[in-house]
Length: 312
Length: 312
Image 1: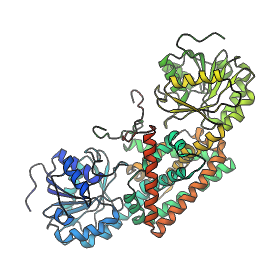
Image 2: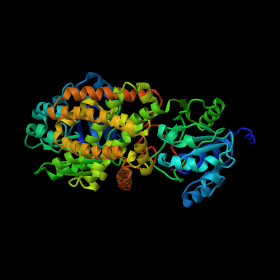
Image 3: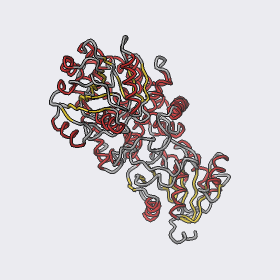
Image 4: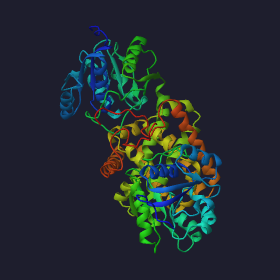
């Protein structure tokens, strides 16, 4: 395999899937000159055409197998439920010494689905950039999506340290902070910080939609901050999130059980008029927010310190 | 009562409570020159000193009774649970012809608590600006908080149309869109769009805090978009929210019941691996988001089109 050019981290990057994460990676890799060539594949011919049109890939391939040929980095950026089939297809075509990573929100299920298809001599290093917006598709990406966001890697035992170092370098070069953890632990932490909150937001928005006495237009018109934020979360890609819940089932169900328990305790306090219980609970949760701001994962500014994509 | 000066809507505005909403109103009223004088009262001497220091009131009073003397607009901006006691205190000191309004998030309970103390010849027009941030206190206000936000008035039958028109004019002059509705209906709509979402966010953040296996620092460090938004909501003022749930008990409990029902259906779909159910649900909720954006209550930009207070 030819060495990567000066300043680049990989010679040829193959993106399998051309949605929000893949297109943002491509924009960021191009902006920082981290690869000589980016090849893209998406099932949809329209997505491939958009990627060429916008110019975040140098070329597209008609199949995933063709896209990965000769690539020294392959990024699986499809919904978690589609990872296994893609891995089976590309496995025989992967270049010796190449690194395969993924960007799925669940890690153990991806390892179970993908690892059996990775040939000896190819490095599979699962990953998860904790970054996103409620938008999806090849037009939704922007180069600064990963700025100051965590990118968690969950390498399996025996992974080549040099391959991991190179992948870390790429993630860091597009602005992310990288950490490594065990896949099972990752899935529990994310069930708390992301998966269950998303399910709850979906539920609340669905309830609002169902209510006959509160007409849609009123819910929409007078939507206050709480509900507005929920609708943004609940506007996320349905296929991606279906797969998250189906593949991180155990952790999500466990956290949901705890959530319901706590919610019933607060509901009981409301019914009984126990203001002291409510006040103490709300005071405790306020402190967690301060911790997040101090950890630099958010700001107290009304725009949340969010990264603004250019021209939006 | 002296007529208000040229360009002004009220001669003297008395703000009872000097938190986020009152201080934002004061900033906005001063910026637009809508009153000749703003008098402030807060229970806390420190809050009164801050209000003078920042300069959003012209003077403060030592008691609520003293603050309302000679005012042609009195704004009750204290937690909903404190409205009744304040009304009892100021009732005998209200100027004939004056208007009393409030900014509480619950309306029927405020009407029940306040109306009996309002003397004949004084106009009580309950109100609720649907605007806020997770911050509280006299330092948290800014003049543009109400820009493009709804301000709901829930006048009781027989309210003087001219007094209502004047209050509407003030609200609109500081950027709000005004609508009128029945108090009971208001409380149900807000239970859906604001009160229940807040309780759910508080609950989820509390669950995360409780989990022993997921250390605080990890929850904070790797907090993804979903959870970050929840912590912001759950950082809201504990006293204000305790009062909201205690005073809008019936509507909140009803919506919570529907929420739990829906959540259990989704939980069951996860347990049974029913991906079609999940996908259909998530697709439906995505459409509601589009409605909100089209209604102009939010934008698709990552900063939510939020108003940015100066210097933050």
